[in-house]
Image 1 (cartoon, one colour):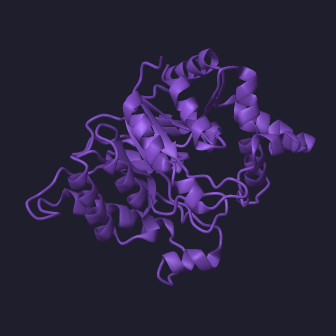
Image 2 (tube, helix red, strand yellow; image 1 turned 90 degrees about the vertical axis):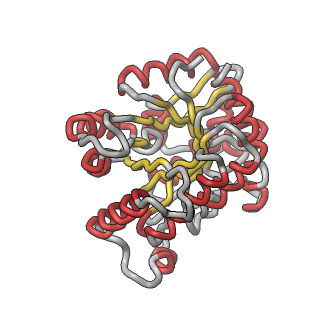
Length: 324
């Protein structure tokens, strides 16, 4: 059993031979089970133009999850500020907060969520890709709208703003604005320690948080045995190889049987092993020990697991084992 609050990040990975509809349809059932298990938050990511990921609109997915749950907090992990008008984001998540009984989280990220320059420009309404100054301005405007007394008529519980980060620069942005940070250890584990040190060192108290607060997101694959976990991790290893090679993850999620036959170049196998060692893969005891070690090493206040596992039923089983 993990002592810290435990949350989940869903990506709606598209499985080989299946459609986006097949990736999205099980999410209501996943949300209901997470609610029953006592997970603290359920967040959805924003990605565009990828055959691998069907999660393009975390606002819609979070509202869908809110409608079938009663306790788990729902939100974005995250919405990407350059793609949205700040006032529209504030209104959307205030609406989600009103509909969910104040259970809404607004996690904000920096990137465009796409690799295709045509898609990036379309998301920006024809503008050039956002620069750092654009991101800071959008974020500050968004926080200003969330601070308004009557964002919606009569007032609602304001959605809780979070800053997503995977680098020391992102940690600085969270610290300067006094925001809780959701750190992407599942993407850039080598950046975790220096980034969180910067965040705590430079944190400025704000209306949002009086002290630093760290949520650590960890890739977690938990099965009844270490061997089964390694089998389930095969598809994510293949997907990771495309990302590490600069392919952008432009690949549907293979079945575990298909992934078993995939051959990695020695250098790529070494990179994947290095990444996997920083995450939490294995049987329940090993995963619990690994998550506990990471929480101690990083001083995290909360853990979030993301599970790139083929088939929603297998993924739900992983969520159950982590909570057992």
